[in-house]
Amino acid sequence: MIDPYNYVREAISNGESLLSLCCGIGNELGGLNTQEVTAVDIAPQYLAEVHKACPRVNTVCSDSLVYIKKQPANSVDVISNIDGIEHLTKQAGLELIEQMKRVCRKKILLFTPEGYVRNEPHNAWGIEGANEFQIHKSGWKVKELEGLGFKLIARDSGISQHNEPYFTLMFVYEK
Image (cartoon, rainbow, N blue to C red; front, side, top):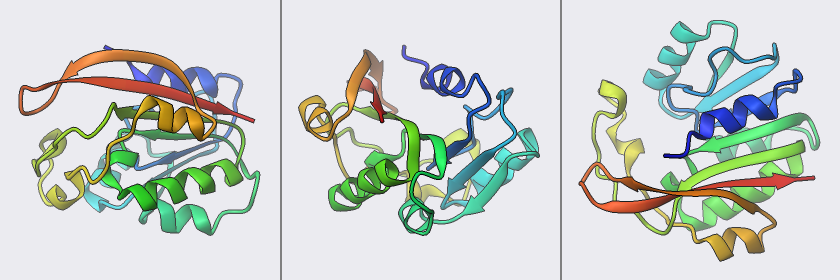
């Protein structure tokens, strides 16, 4: 199984700044080699977990698209969106991608299921109160993301929470 968090850690191994959008509980944020990390998620319950595990990380409770629209161009070295874009509508996801391209200086890391994968509300990570944010609203294909300038760097199989097989995709966009 692909570990998207290792790609994030490698991308900032020289102290680059990181913006983690749709960060969830921030699995990629532990033990980072940088002091400049911002984690954005719409669910305050998830951000509370980020703060407990990584108190130095700047946490922001916001819709990721709303947040990134307010950021200056070329203001962050690396942006990660790990298992996040599929929780947005296709239109919002496309807009988020354009905003990430505008804001990042070096690299965007994007991890998502291939195509639409059903994800019913559940207490992700055993945390109650954020079920509404767990629903998948879009699916993304390799050719679609490659057409937006992303390069597929890993593809692997997985099993959904419904015991259904699917593929996971790891992409990079580099400036």
